[in-house]
Amino acid sequence: MAKLNINSTVRMNSGYEIPLLGYGVYQTPMDVAEEVTAHAVKCGYRHADSAAAYRNEAPTAAGLLKAQVPRSELFFTSKVPPKAINYDAAKAVVDESLRLTGLDYIDLYLLHAPYGGRENRLGAWKALVEAVEAGKVRSIGVSNYGVHHLDELEEWIKQTEEKEGKGKGGVLSVNQVELHPWLARDHIAEWCKKRAVILENFVILPKSVTPARIEENSDIYDFELSEGDMQVLKTEVYEPCAWDPTTSRD
Ligand SMILES: NC(=O)c1ccc[n+]([C@@H]2O[C@H](COP(=O)([O-])OP(=O)(O)OC[C@H]3O[C@@H](n4cnc5c(N)ncnc54)[C@H](OP(=O)(O)O)[C@@H]3O)[C@@H](O)[C@H]2O)c1
Image 1: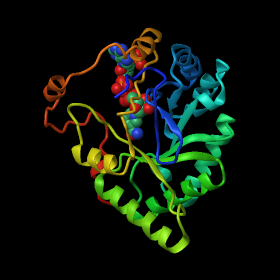
Image 2 (image 1 turned 90 degrees about the vertical axis):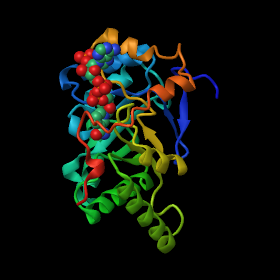
Image 3 (image 1 turned 30 degrees about the vertical axis):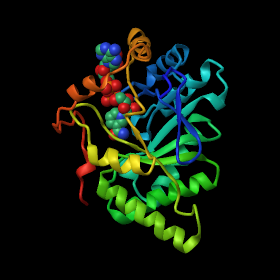
C-alpha cells in the first residue's frame, strides 16, 4: 500500500473522495471554532467534521474557507441531530446547515444516530437521498449504526431500487462510529468493508482547540505499525468512551 500523507484521500461509494485526516469539532465552542479550524487548515487539514448538534457549523465552515484554499479541496461534514431523525425534520436541518454555513453544497451529511424507530430512520435517510438529488449534499451516510441498523437500511435501499430504479434508494458512503483498540467493533468493520462503506474513525477525526495539539495531531505520517504491533493492539474488550447508539433496539 502506498504511504499515506496529509493529503491522502479515499474514494467513497458516491464517487467523491474523502480526506483521510479530518478535524473534529465536537465540544469546540462556537466563539473559537472559526479560529481553530482556520489554524487546522494552515496545518494542512482539509476536512472538518461538524454536526447540527455541535452548534458550530457556521464558524467551522468559516474557518475552513478563511485561508482561501479552493472549495474543491475542502470537505465539510454535518449531521442530522438525534432528535431530528425523521423525514420532515431532516429535510429542514439540511437546509438550515446550508443557510448557516453559506456553502453551495455540503460534502457529507450523516444521520447522527439510529434513533426514532424504523419509519423515522428510513424517512430521514430518504430526506438525505433527496438532498443529494437536489445538489445540496454530495455524499451521505450514517453514524453510530450497528449491524442491525445497517441491514435495515440496506434492505430498504434494495427494495426502493427494485420499485423506483437504480440509485433511487441512495448510496451509503460512510458509517461514523467510535473505534479504537478498546472498541474494535469487528462486526461493523466487516459489514462496512464488504460493501466498501467508509468506516470513520479509520478516517480519523482528532479534536483539539489547542494550536500545538492541532499541529501535533496532523504530524502522524512518520511511523508505521507492524503486524506485530497490530496484534498487541487487539485487546478484545468492548469499552466505549462515549455514547453507544449502535446497540439501540427501538
Ligand atoms: N458521530 C458521533 O457520535 C461522534 C462522537 C464522538 C466524536 N465524534 C467525532 O470525532 C471527533 C473526535 O472525538 P472527540 O472530540 O470526542 O475526542 P478526541 O479527538 O478523541 O479527543 C479530544 C480531547 O483530547 C484532547 N487532545 C487532543 N489532541 C491531544 C494531544 N495531542 N495531546 C493531548 N490531548 C489531546 C483535546 O483537548 P483540547 O481540545 O483541550 O486540546 C480534547 O480534550 C469529534 O470532534 C467529532 O467530530 C463523533
